[in-house]
Amino acid sequence: MAASLGTVVGLGSTTRLTSGFVRSGVNARNPLRLACPSVRGGKVTCFERNWLRTDYNVIGFGLIGWLAPSSIPAINGNSLTGLFFDSIGQELAHFPTPPALTSQFWLWLVTWHLGLFICLTFGQIGFKGRTEDYF
Image (cartoon, rainbow, N blue to C red; front, side):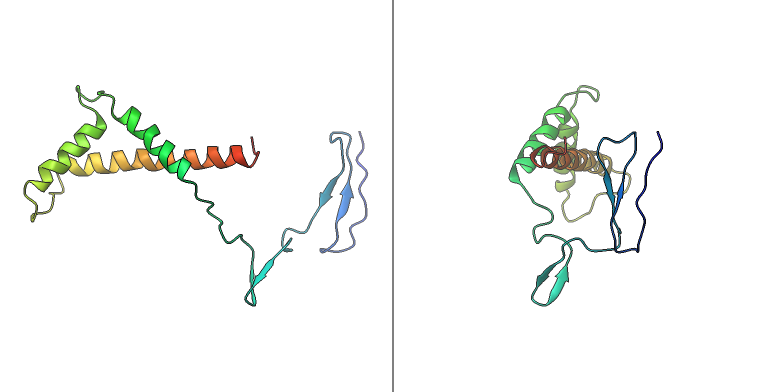
C-alpha cells in the first residue's frame, strides 16, 4: 500500500502520482498557472465569452416549476401566488402612495421572488449539469 511519488522539479512542472487506492495516476499541477488563456483584442481572458450560457428552457421550466407549487392553496385556503397578486392589486388601488412598511405586500413579494430565484438557480445547475455530463 505504499505510494510512489515522482520528484518535484518546480512549481511549473507536473508530477505523476501513483497510489494503491487510485487506479490510474493523477497529475499534480500548479493551480496558479493558466491552462489555456484566450487572447481577444490584445487582452488575456480566462473565461469563455458566453460564461453564463443562458438557455430559455431553464427560464421556462423554472417559471412553470415555481408557479405550479406556489399556486396550491396552502395558506388559509389561499395560494402564495394569489396572495401576492391580490396584494399588488390592493397597493395599486392607492397608486401614488407607496406601500406601507407593515403591508403584507412586502412579505409576499420577498417570499414569492425568493422561491422563484431558488427554483431558477437549481434549474440552471441541474440543466447545465445534465447537458455537460456532470451527473
